[in-house]
Image 1: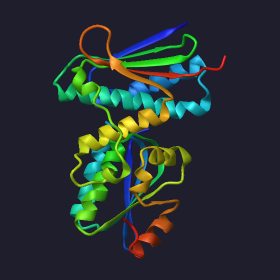
Image 2: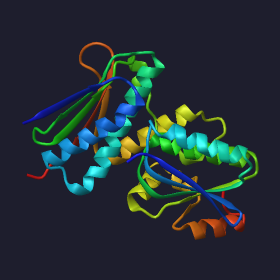
Image 3: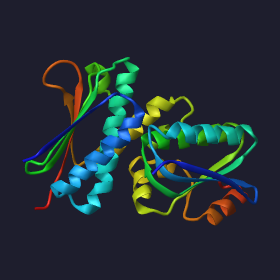
Image 4: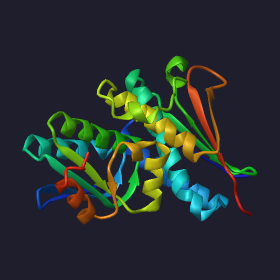
Length: 118
Length: 144
């Protein structure tokens, strides 16, 4: 399935809903969208991976890039993920120790509002 | 025993095709359904690595993928990049993953290797028998 990207605002957070496959071919589009959002002033960014059915190292690299970019401008970055196959990818790469991972958008937004996003 | 071979130009768009074929052959070979996500990810990572190496060295050679089901399901992904590049794989410790000094390429390579090593119990990365290049060899059990 092709990559899909949709943005909405929840409270103070910009939520980017990602769907489909994030791989070496589609990850540049995700990177561009995240950079656009941050350049446009988004500082509390939540990426919802709920509809992602494939995520590889290139996609993970893009997410780390967004985390670093937001950190450098005093922003926060969090991920929403509750699917075991994806969570296993984060555990195996130790990136579960790098990203704040939340089971729902509401939980991520609540953590972001409390300043615990990243 | 049956064999499926696939060769593709080193472009990111074709990696998905390799994943789809690799999983289709795995399913037919009798790899357990619950392992197919891991097969898909591992073949994708091995092909992504090969494509990145070919692009890094400006090589137009095809990336080769060979799948066979003799006893177990074996997938070999073969690149034509110089060996010193191909074998330079290392997993990254967590405190370095989001380090500012780490380049995007180094991060993606390290994470890709962590995924391969984490998902493939029987994994070998070795020089090809003839000529220049490396082979990532992955083996999964089959139920018959």
